Image 1 (spheres, helix red, strand yellow):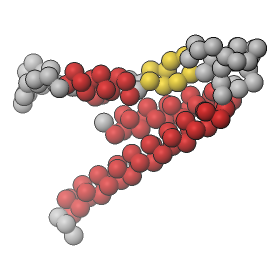
Image 2 (cartoon, rainbow, N blue to C red):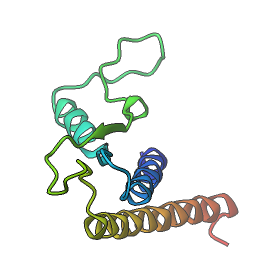
Image 3 (cartoon, one colour):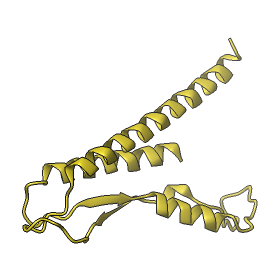
Image 4 (cartoon, rainbow, N blue to C red):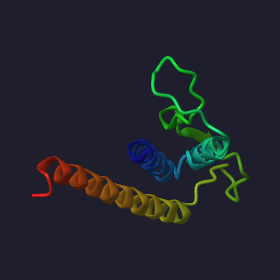
Amino acid sequence: MIPNTMDALSLRQNVISQNIANYETPGYKRKYVDFENELQKALSEDSALTLKVNRDQHINNTLSLGKIQPNIQIDDSKSLRDDGNNVDPDVELVRMTQNTLKYNTLSRLMTYAIQRYETAIRGGK
């Protein structure tokens, strides 16, 4: 779950960077990565009764987070600029900062998880 989310956040960072780089491009429409909506949808579907299985051959209706993929969407909203470009660099920089904070938080969580496994492997030494 965390690695998939980190991949989506990395993709989002690249898309935001592209938006900022194309600020001066006439007709460019900002893009964004939609991941949280797909995750929320999958989690709400998972709230239903799920089957417990102990073999791969069994019928399994549990949530597979690995199947959730981030989607790059185009923002077709109107632009206040005459050239049709709808990128606001200030807003994009704020989004980039938010995205970086989320990524750093997940990175720390991964580090803590790895440290717990190392402690368990070493037997608490």
